[in-house]
Image (cartoon, rainbow, N blue to C red; front, side, top):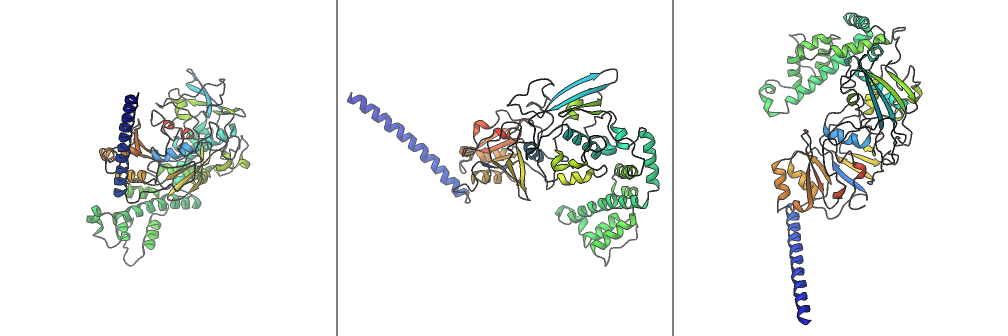
Length: 505
């Protein structure tokens, strides 16, 4: 018995020594890490239930109506529900009309499509989730859908690209305000040959001035880059190079004039002639000019004779039916957008569902401007505060799906340039999740004994063609099982943000 007890005691001491050795080794690495990273935080300075993330690169201004990068899309995904549901591979998988809505169902809509081969038109019925609400608790219904479709048609204007090339029956007639679009196009061409004084002013301000302002900023940037010194060194100031490149009158001189004087005088040289500017910049401004002329024409009394899109019909308070030209990808492209509520983006007083759809026709650009930096929709979160350094998202208690476990998500506008800075920020607890581009240097940094990063950071690869193709998260703060097992462009942490947990919860 004593021998058995002695043996058990020796074994216990042995395992205790191993355990002490392991933690001693880990703590040693911890100290090494603190020596290498002098700014290591000793405690978290954040609210309970808050997570800090870098969602990827993003510009200063982006909108649910106009965005470019994957980072911007990640932020918008947290704040808005897309009308279209997709699986992890990006395949559209909305349930059909008539199927039961489940409590755990987080689809924004049920969709049914039927193709008429004779007419070559697809009929798409869209029924909204009865639990769909804005962050303030206002129900989102068929009127909001009409607002979204009409708004996007107006923003696209003569381009016809509101829905990735898919055209709604009657869309063109509505855009031109006439049952004879071809005749209306000829009217627009005629107007542009001899524009009114009011239209001339618009062409000058919105095309010529805006175009030259963009070119002036480009010229100024050349003086800040060493590789362009072979050009900039020949000119004393940016205004001189700008005058050389863009003055329409070849003998024009910027000598003795301020930059603003030079700019205004060159704008005056072009006046409203956007086609002259095309010769200099090689950019085509025709579509923009046609859009301005179309808007001016529709303001004339008796010219706007088509008030509705014939291919959009409201069926009931939660359902609309759309007739789209074609078969392939009609649903996939037509319904792929985030739902913007009238309350918050449009004007409910200007909606009657017959001639007015929540905004004044011709003033849709004002809604676009309003949407920059306003992320308030039907998603799991909504933007409570935005500035140049961060976007603070609050939990949406009216979200149609499972309510988010996190109270707040702080999106940091880091735009990292070095892998070393990413690892450093994760280690010193300045950020919990980072979406970035995978690299050999990043992998080496995580494995590095000097920073003990491999103990504290986990990396998961995202199946995507986007540059930002891996997720890094801090294991001491992010609950690993709440991270989706398979990450793709469509099945991301941001699309399932309501399921994410922090270890302090």
